[in-house]
Length: 352
Image (tube, rainbow, N blue to C red):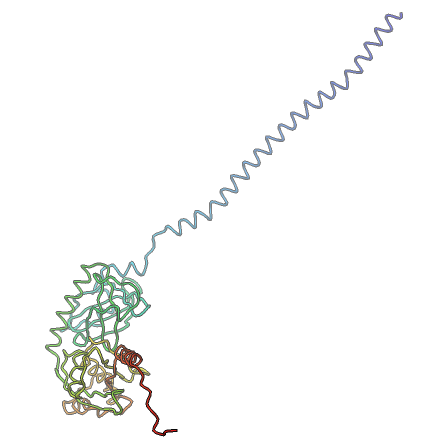
């Protein structure tokens, strides 16, 4: 009995001892299975969220990249495209039986530190400067008769900074100076040769070819002088300076003096560099002034009236004055010479 009891008790105790372990193992197995399924579900959710986030993040970046890389019409790119005279309203407004379009193209006009994108239209007798709004629309900025336009190479006198002389030259009209910078050397040479040829032909047809020009000298000694010179439509400001010095009996060269002009449009006199045409400045001023005196731009004025205006029979506020002054370089040179001369102390008259 003892052996049967003990075996029975041992079997019961063994089964009791093993049942919690089996329960623990079953719970562990089920928990491990449940944890694995949970981990896989979490990882699948993370992958879905990650892909959704990537899609959401990629959408604006794609939009931005497409917007940045999208080729859209640019105003400057439109400037380089050839202009059709038949569809350009600005060109059509200037065309006439005696006027045709010779050249057109994009240019950079530089004055001082300022650079402007412009479009030039060269007609047989006038140069038109416009701002491009689109390939077909242009805003008129300025216009000048070819007989009053001047060309030079003194780019360092007009704008600051580096300019390529192979693609640029000085272009001006009353009373503006700017550096015209073209896209290539070929374009620059084409515009330069065409302008020079047309300016020469228009000056030959110009009438009158000479006018009286009053020159006022200032800062030349203690007195102010004035002389009336006869200048032609080909005389530059340097030529007028030499004539004025000869008439005034003053020794010196055009480098020692500078011609200034006050056309009434500016608050102060404007210094000329030397290559400008005083004839063109004067005639342009007369054309702008006559409508104010007669009330119409299209009015025809007789030669007697023309001569009266040319000899300064205008009100003072409407006169175009040319003033001769010593140049800044010459004045600075004279001051340096005076400062370098030894100063001799004069003996006092009174003997103490």
